[in-house]
Every structure is written in structure tokens, then in C-alpha cells.
Image 1: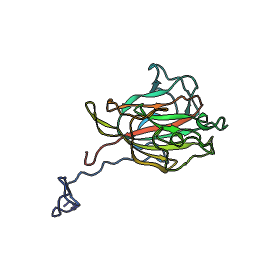
Image 2: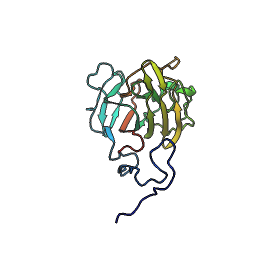
Image 3: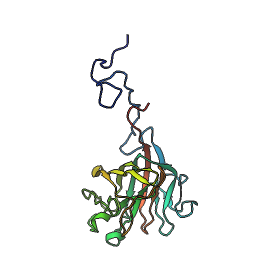
Length: 244
């Protein structure tokens, strides 16, 4: 006889067909974590595994991505332009690692500058802000032009850094915004944005605004003229509760 795993005499949860401790509520699916911290779990879609740029194209013309791949990382080749994934996706958990050049050159926005663009439109800033002040909403891990990070969690230039991002895409009904985009960002394991409602797409020297766009889009990495490196890039599609 199977062991009863819950109760069928408890009250129903608000706006739910399930009771408190309901034995018939679907079990969460099993996902096997990566063996080491930051490695992709079993249900991740790997966008860069250290070997090639087959899953990426030039953002400029859709042609072959021109960045350099060596020793397990990809590196911005200044002047070749942004690159983006062939894959388009919406709500997700995203992981990536990046490194600013070990030899710190320049200051403010001129040092180790790149960017991570969700859906090609919403930027989390990449910048070397280790002992390098700049405007607050453009510092490392800022939601560019909108929100500074809660703290500066930068490692020294030449050290690998991590971004773990929870992305919830905006929702539109026709021309109307019905729900803004939300971002949670951990920089080197430290929460720097906690479910922040974005004010619109990000940009330089302009106010953010929302314009209707598809529910999915590419991940884009920015060529801002500095040889920033990236590795171990993967994402997981986010699904709702009780989805089997």
C-alpha cells in the first residue's frame, strides 16, 4: 500500500484547486545541479561552452560572430560589433562569467566596458569598477541608466566575475504595457538588484521607455571597445508552479 504523502481534509489555498499539504499536487520535476558552482544544471541550454561561437551571430548583420575564442573563453574584438544568440527566449535564469582586462587602462566608462542585454534591449552593465568611480547608474551591474546596484561587488581586473540573473520579460496587450520587466541580479554571489521593475528599455543619455516588442528576444553582448572576456554562458527557461 502506497504511503499517503499529504492530507485531504485541509482547507483549499486561496485561488487554487489544491488544499494545504495536498497529496495530489504535482511534484516538482527533478533537475540535477552542475557538479561545481556555476556549471550548467541538467535542464540548462548552453549558449557558450568554451569551444566555438556556433550559437552566436553578429548583431549588426546576422552574419558570423567575429569575436575571438580561445582557452575556453570568448573575447571582444574591438570594432567588430555586438554579438547575439541565434536562440531567442523570454523569462529565464541566466548565468555568465566575465573578466575585465588584467591591465587596467582608462577610467570611468572607458575601463573594461561591455554589457549584457536581455532580449537585446535591457542592459546589465559590464564594467571594471574596482577602484574606478563612474556615474552610479552606469557602474558595474547597474541596470544601465536606471538603477545603480545595491553594492559594488567588483573583483580586481583580471579576475573572473559572475552574473546570475533572473529575468521576467514585460507583457504587452497590443500597444499597452500590462506588466513591466523585472530583474534580479547577483554579482559574484551578492544580490545587487532584487526583483526591480524596469522603467523601459535602457539607453545612453535618454529616458527609458517601453515600446511593444515580441515576448522573446536574443541575449546580446556588447562591443564597447574593450577586450572583455566571457565564459560559461547558459540559461534555463522559467516556468510557473504546478506545471508538469
